[in-house]
Image 1 (cartoon, rainbow, N blue to C red):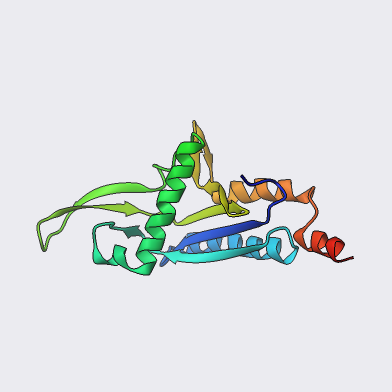
Image 2 (cartoon, helix red, strand yellow):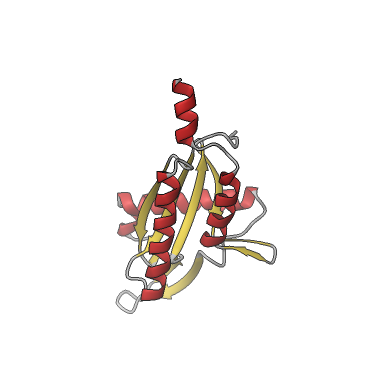
Length: 164
């Protein structure tokens, strides 16, 4: 079980080839994450690029990248289930027919941007998500996280105190 004193690690997922407006938002979020790390509020952050969608039944899903993304999505869905939230409006599945093979397959559309917060080794929060009628975006989550962290000693301060 994680606590509020466990180190925070953030994982940001961004879609490749996003339109300019989405790219600007992604860059702003990355700058915020870098600042949180530089100021010692978070242990580290990681940016992972993913595509527009993933088809769990293709060979691409069997690659290291594909398996990583599918495992993360499964972890996010498990978190949502345990926390009475939903991710369905952000990780939508679509049935498609291949014009070449004529076979139907299911693809999952990935959000332009997703954020996972880990405390210690445990997943503590996923954004975007929906809780009832409330939508929690990546930016909302960063706003909430920054408010919570302002009142806590930074990881750098805690390390300095421990060394003395």
